Length: 255
Image 1 (tube, rainbow, N blue to C red):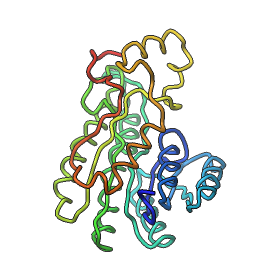
Image 2 (image 1 turned 90 degrees about the horizontal axis):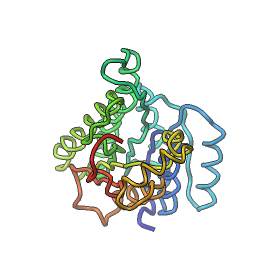
Image 3 (image 1 turned 135 degrees about the vertical axis):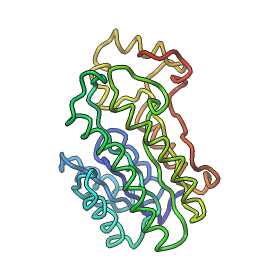
Image 4 (image 1 turned 30 degrees about the vertical axis):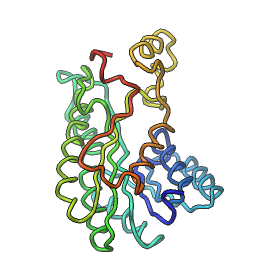
């Protein structure tokens, strides 16, 4: 197990990609703090799945757009497990609105949950890693849309573009502390956020045809990438994004 004895925090960890990350980290031996805002029953079920794998997970209800709640996640990890080795900034939302139509409230919500939480999650986790010594790893779950325009989803693309530069800049700043900062950029993945496309046979057929590997990705594929990046096998990877998209970014924009 590549992460035996490690301690991780996963924001937005009780559904979709976040839940898959939690389970894969547990399979690799990590103990985990699961951040969630809703569906406590899903978090409890995930805690039981982790326990069945021989590890421990605790669910903490927290709003990652608030610094006090992010600090609570860090404090909970230290109190329960003694340290933090991995911070996964995964929580994210989108509004599917254009530059012309996005409201101030929509903009602020997307930027706060997607980008502000990743910035301060990185900051607070890094401070704890420096305090305890030994380095660590921070993984930002971004998107192909940190580079690839998605008309009609402007605030989301802006937030992911910000995560791109957060990953690069923080990776450079934190390198002397032996803290690696890496982005993971999923393409089209079978999660609730893509439910409408997945349930529309024509839309799904069009999407699959645009992906060189011919299929939508799975949360488990993203989770295995995160576990690899968090391990010593990836000890020379930092300040960059690894795209996990089946080759989608090499196709023409506009999906």
